[in-house]
Length: 115
Image (cartoon, rainbow, N blue to C red):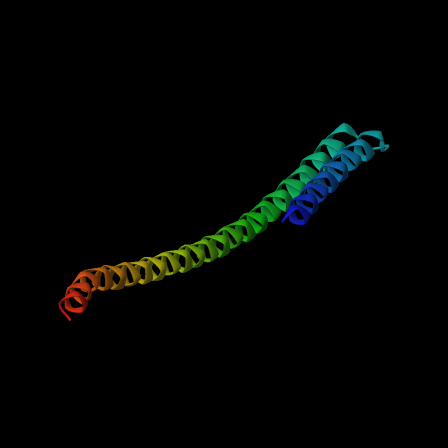
C-alpha cells in the first residue's frame, strides 16, 4: 500500500514539475504577452484536468481498497466469533460433564459403602 502512496506522490510531483516547467518555458519564449497568457491558461487548464482525472482515479482505487479491507475484516471478525462460540460451547459441555460426574460420585461412594 505504501508503494501506491509513493507512486501517487511521484506522479503529483511530476505533474507539478511539468506545470512549472511549462509555465517557465512560456514566460521565457519570445512571444507577445497575450499569446503567452493564453498558452499559460490553456496549459494550466490541461494540467488541472489531468490532476482532477488522476485524483478521481486514485480516489476510486482507494475506495476499492477500503472495501476490500472492510470485507476481509468482517470475515476475520466472523471467524473469531465462530472460534469463540465453539470454544464456549466446548467448555460448557466439559463443565456440564464434570458436574454430572461429581454429582454421580457421591452416589457411587454410598453404594460402595453399603456393600
